[in-house]
Image (cartoon, rainbow, N blue to C red; front, side, top):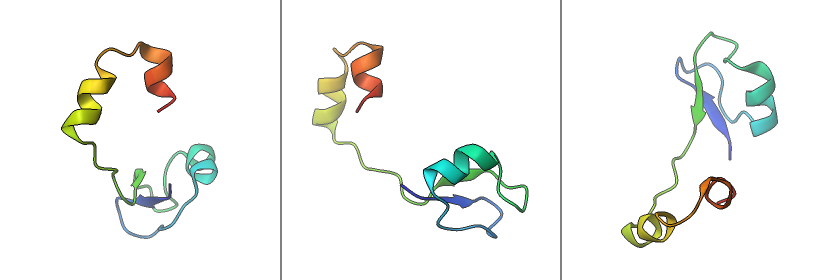
Length: 57
């Protein structure tokens, strides 16, 4: 997954770089370039999971 700055300067930032930088070089928040779609079936399956198995998804 790659990240981009909310202020538009930084794009295609790796996860590692996003974690180490914290913010974009322009001061914007680093957000995912694309948000994965979750189906209603996946939501239903996840309801019964405890924190650790859910976090690993």
